[in-house]
Length: 116
Ligand code: 5GP
Ligand code: ZN
Figure 1: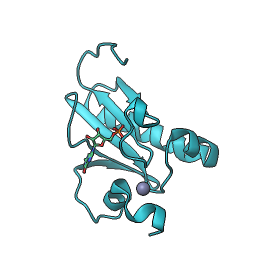
Figure 2: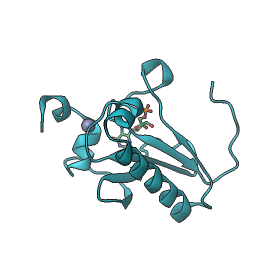
Figure 3: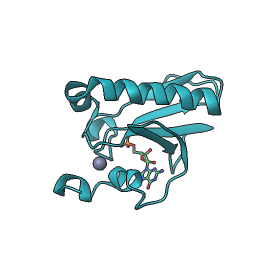
Figure 4: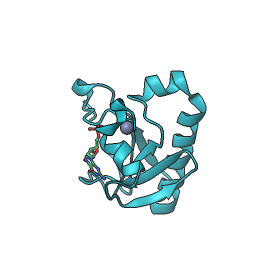
């Protein structure tokens, strides 16, 4: 691991150094249940490669972002009815606390709209 990734929680989960409840995988991404779920289905979709946030990832490797979105869609189809919210918090003031890009897949109930 590089200096950037050796302290990264999600790099450690990807590497199998920390446990996670993995629900789906692709060659380039994994999905696991959030440790503090905010809905009946609340999973995190994470690329196996380290990128800090969704804009950095989109610029560096748009195909990998597309892979994450496809995996999010698969998770929502497998664990719920295929309807979901996909959230990327970007920056601490937007609620980002882990600086390895991840999409929150929120599903399994009628969602309200109070994001701010
Ligand atoms: P953020 O706040 O960066 O958008 O999202 C980070 C998410 O990671 C939070 O929803 C938090 O509950 C989740 N999380 C933090 N630590 C762990 C962990 O060790 N395992 C899992 N599965 N989720 C975690
Ligand atoms: Zn990482």
